Amino acid sequence: FAKAAQFYRKKLGCSSDKSSKNYCPVITVAGSYPGFLSAMMRLMHPDIVDIAYATSAPLHLYSHGIDPKTYYDYVTRVADAAVPGCAAAVKETTKEFHDWAVTPDATMQEKAKEIKICEGGIPKYITDSDSLELWWTEVNEIVTAHFAEADMGYYPPGPDAEFERACRIFLKEGDTMQEKIGNMLTMRKEFQEKGCFDMYSELPNGKNARISASDWSGMGDGIKAYMWEFLSCQLLPALTQSSESMFYPREWSLEWTANHCKMRFDMEVDPDRLRNYFGFEDLTGVDHLLFVNNINDAWSSASITVPPPNSGIEVINVLNGAHCSDFRGPGADFDTPEMKAAHKQIEETIGKWLKEIKKENED
Image (cartoon, rainbow, N blue to C red; front, side, top):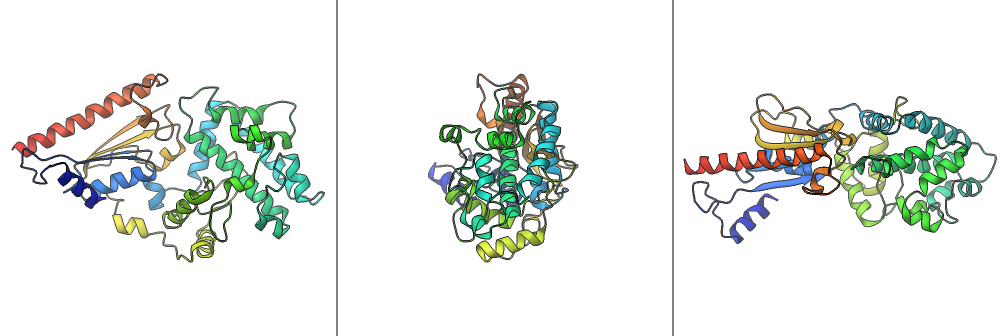
């Protein structure tokens, strides 16, 4: 990335000499994991990158500086604030689902049909195992990950958002547990039209693929999921579903993840790799770095939400934003007043820093 910045600076006819009138400042801008990289560009290459803007960037997740239960506990709090009673309804339903799913009173295929899983829609590694426990684990991972993904997209907040619609599925009186789980699985348009859910839609490419993979916030399918899973075996996001969350408890462990990554990619994991390489636990003296957090986004629980001491880092927290919501504008008709104010603050902050850089160069 640093070499690419230098290449394009030269291609544009810009000087790399900061005292030159032809000097062009470099700003890195990105969100989520790329937002982490944007911040690291400023940290590792301050001679090249003048300003970094990172949104929804979970630095503490990659340093393993937070409790693994933090993420899904946060999703739970957002759900209950969005739709009161949601967390209790989801917790009750997922407990009932577990107890029903692992009871050997019917075949896996018969149970799958009851929750709207398509015929032939159970991956072969599950059917070959003939394990109801494994089948439940993978369906439960999908339900949990869909809630996490809906939280990431919860902007603008309101009754039409997928996150709130998911909550209302579990709160609907008169529906059975099987209907609630089935309606959650098929709530997205592609499966509503199909009338059933295909578990292969959550299976990455490659040998020994599993729905429960190296990132328990959801993988998706195909080559993109394969690449993200490979990367996650290096990032090692630790995401426990605790008894305090609305999801059925499932404990993340480094041992499980290490075995999985070895099976998938013949990779040895190193939980200290990023922390040792980047040294981002200590941000003393770092300046011209802006973190934006959207507080309805559970990843904000793993980000920099308060400026570190003895640094020139600035932080903007948007109370009703979701994952990378600040990248959707400015000027979108649906933007909340809080987001409009944040866009103005972002523009003012970066504008102020550009003026500082220009003045330093002139001096």
